[in-house]
Length: 457
Image (cartoon, rainbow, N blue to C red; front, side, top):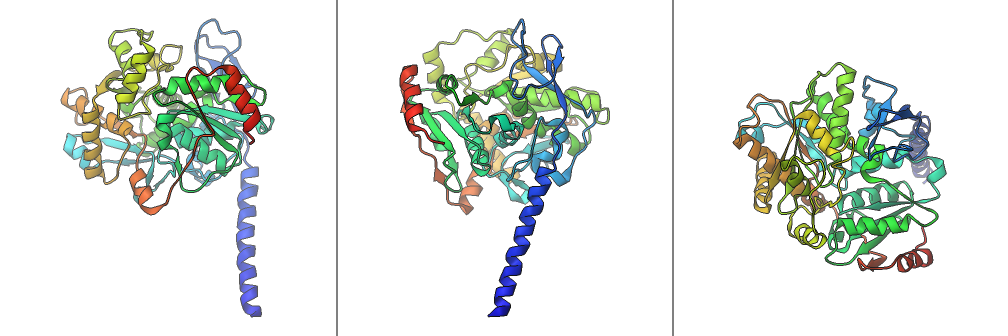
């Protein structure tokens, strides 16, 4: 009996010491050094803590992180995407982190007649080392954004608006790391809010009614952010969100050994493509991976194509889009996450600038084309992918058929989500339910009154 007790105690002590070692490692992490640049006018300043805009800008502009380290040192010991910490605006490390995985395609590449097709996979596919539990590259955003949080904001509630996958990623990361979070999501999209186990009560959910869209969820979140104790995560304006997503390009470039010639991705807001472009510019400055700019080839799901329509009209400004028609179109697409009515397309440093700078192009993909591409990917690459990733794959097929890419071009295909079916084969899932569903016409008083009275984080 004594021997059994001693053995058990030594086992407990071992795991306790392991936990302490991990804790001290995380505590020893030194925040990344960087400054903030206004893309529109080039002004530079220090980050005040949670900057989303540059003070006194004369025109709409994204801000950009300018990192002290110009050459990327991959730190495997940090784990997950934090191996790219040199180019992430983070103050600490969080637990549970994973990373995009890049590999050279064989079967899909052969099918399309491509000799240098590289797939950057974001999702759950343990066979290749991909272990994102929410099966989406939105995890790259969440782990970067939440690691940017300073102590001055940890007692406040971060507000994130989402069409689905972003909400799932932030919910998982915040639950795991005890970060207060309020999500606003269209009710029609809450089927995306599944998890391997119930979440920490620090995560709450508000929805906009059936028939609403992502833009309505953003409006709901903006109203809550007017209240004391709540702050906006910031979306595309948050440098940590974009630079977290840029780990897809960092994964690809460090694997391939050079900057690719083409970058393919489906877009709702275009933030991931902007992030890839920004990472490309850093790699050029790094000097070890080439001086070319990957052509940004992005795609949308018909009939919801506001950015595609503007690009084909050679317009920096988005074209007029009736709100009811936009909601109807968003409801018809299979890739629900690609339905942002107000994307960061037109402002300085936005998607329009990224595409002009790289001589990029836009593609429009039907539901049927997206589904066929998903089926093809599953058959050839061995894993299920989301419809958004199917849209990107279908756009690559279009580019091959249109002879917009050549057989020997180095191509990066960003598979932004996949492996959900595989994950659910091996795990039971739990769904997050809304604390309240609001109509799109709900008053500020009604919304704020409910939040103040009923939500305890």
